[in-house]
Length: 166
Image 1 (tube, rainbow, N blue to C red):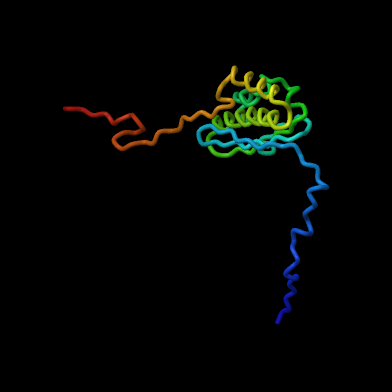
Image 2 (cartoon, rainbow, N blue to C red):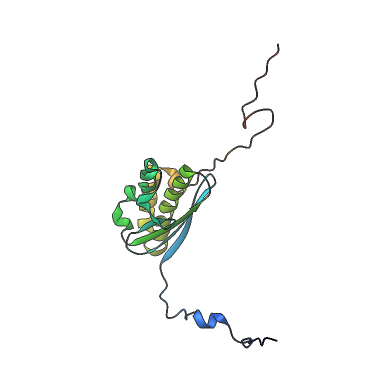
């Protein structure tokens, strides 16, 4: 028979890999969600050098090209200097490509406001918030509209099949 070597009950794999909290500096970061229909974009903003990545790709590579500017809107409205010391990583899934881009722009806008609220000052946050809300309320406030379910007797939620009395 084979001999099995088991570690002692007090042994933990965690003890090998974790470093004490006092050694690691706490990274300044915030995590925010942006949503549109069924698309969800999770933005993770932290101190950095101005990178914005979507699913590991630079934001400049977003497809379709005609909606690319829509994703840039928060950066263009607030100015690139506000994003110069921030890295934003975004994971997006669900929905179609238009909904995903709207979720991304919402996540970017919410993440910078949340970062300023947590690590910069309140007045700067209120200034950013006011600028974004003046441009488009949906950058910070989620759009509650959802698809209405289809019913019987028709081909959609409200449309009915034609009916004749001949």
